[in-house]
Image (cartoon, rainbow, N blue to C red; front, side):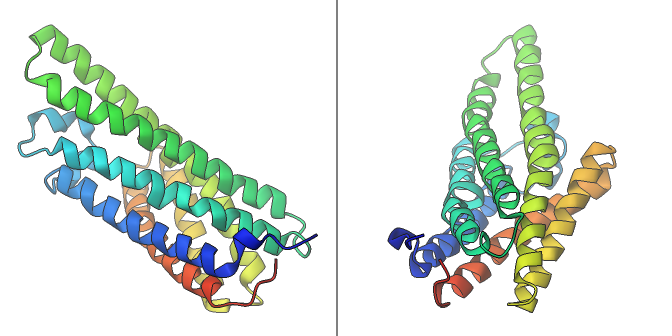
Length: 231
């Protein structure tokens, strides 16, 4: 198969590094948007009683989330498939899981980019009954995205993707393979925490993932940027 020039390592590396940087910005933005009330991550119902919520930051945290944690990883998924396909039989399954993670996760972030500012900004102007309806819609959609799409379905998809990459890289780049395997284990535990309703486990593992995943992307980006192309 002819090489795909637009997936040369330097370009994929730069985009992957950029994804990690933007993801870290997104993580800071959402924390700042919640005025650093970290309990709101696990209990969104408290948001309407919390002072200092910045809806503009929350909106942009989700927009940067779309690119940082998701869409800018798409070239890496394609690149990894082209790299893995001739020597790793499970490459299609592994990298389709990566694509599924990206698409599902970015849709969830796009939904929250609209829902969060809209409901928070209009809440004070609503009547008592309208506020209760708005609160129920806000909490329901937030839980569907955060606990359902992100931390149940997406967590297992990204765990599979990380696991496949770790197995593929273990004979080539042992340190990165171990880092990737650790992230896979964290994501599996996040899935189990949500599936079994073990809230402390789910909260700890998702926060570990949110910090380590961007760092992993930056490390992978530099490794790919400076390696000789195998695709």
